[in-house]
Length: 69
Image 1 (cartoon, rainbow, N blue to C red):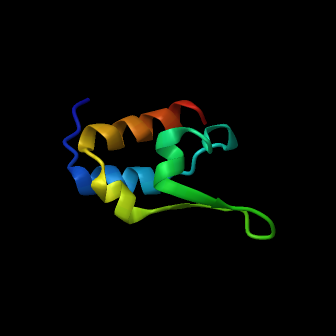
Image 2: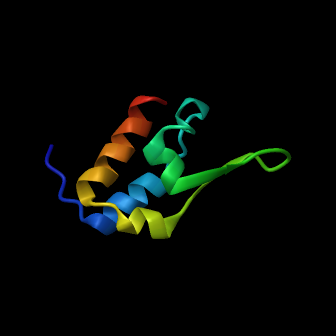
């Protein structure tokens, strides 16, 4: 299957998933988002950081998270 994705599409893919706890300290993951623990347990992506990444790096970030879920 061939899929034609632009940068906006790749950012949407990344924002659609959350990394597992084991990847929270991965340099790329840590740079692009943050974890809020406690009562409201959630991962938040920093859109401005994702926009700074190349399409290849965004794809690699998505693949990293997807393969570790």
